[in-house]
Length: 189
Image 1 (cartoon, rainbow, N blue to C red):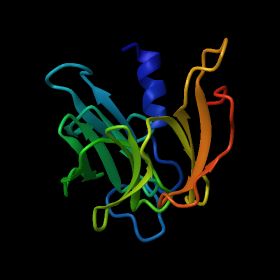
Image 2: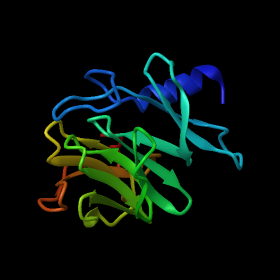
Image 3: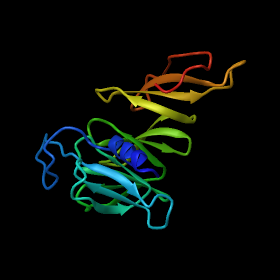
Image 4: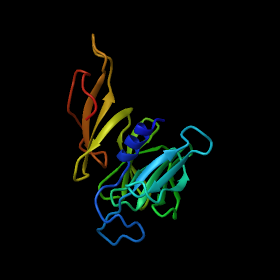
């Protein structure tokens, strides 16, 4: 992976806002971290973490990629075996479930994930799962308040088109599902 691509990917995984001190953020404070994958595609592939300015970089855990929670305290890790979480200090690793982490909700307690083709919402406190969409979802966007998710679903190839997706929205518990577009020519909400 090129250096520019690595930094671009890492920048997307940073938690924003806050103090930058990851030792013991108090309630309501947020930590900043740069998380990236090193040795992509190799047996020693691992998720690394450090300060957003690139200082104090260290190996966090093995895995394909990591997503920093909005409060900066927890990293969701993708592995072949499924989804794991680990504290930003490297402690408290635990298995969450099968699938791949997709995005954090703003409360840092709920994680969107892809399980098989389904888009789900996992409550990390009790590992309960709400299915948002059972059909294959390729992209999604979470509302700023964390209550709604917009996503695209493959519907069918439209005549003379090359898209075949429509956009839906739903509450993050899977209720109040609405189709927002028709015609198979809309994606990437």
